[in-house]
Image (cartoon, rainbow, N blue to C red; front, side):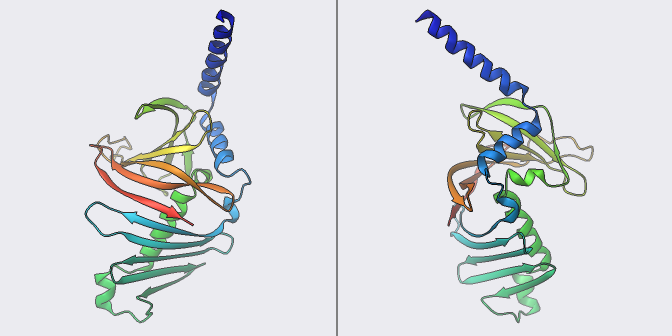
Length: 240
């Protein structure tokens, strides 16, 4: 029994050493192998249905269609009696309001409709639902030191990612299960004029459950919280 305990402790210690020796790039590769073992994200074509639940507000539903090879993106959002839809087909942008393409200037202003907003939705949804694969995109700066952090009682391998100035100024942290390399949490902070992290800014997002879309493991539920005080903001629930 004594020797068995020694063997177990030795193996456990060896696992910790291996994890500590992982570089940022190596951790990212392992996480991608877990989430997208067939390398399917680059040719992703599919639909995502998202229900957004926010405290004291009605649910919002969104249908998202993505075809990366064809450079096509579509998002339809329903809130109360209003349905808006944005389409980006390569460089062509179109917008509808309750199915109508003829939209008045007053409606455009009231519902904040624009092609800039269409591109914002495209970048937002392809980034968040394309993680961690999207961290391979040009402009991502993968920090090589992998940290071990405990969050809500569980230990994680944490990858720090920043971006070139043309992409963004936020600093992101991605928390991976040290055994499976599944992505369980991500977190971002704003930076000041000198590029230094501002601790009381940004949010963290807890990821639970998984759905399989095009052989890719995508987190099903994303619960958002403020970093500064853990205030709960809402949950995005994915179905397919």
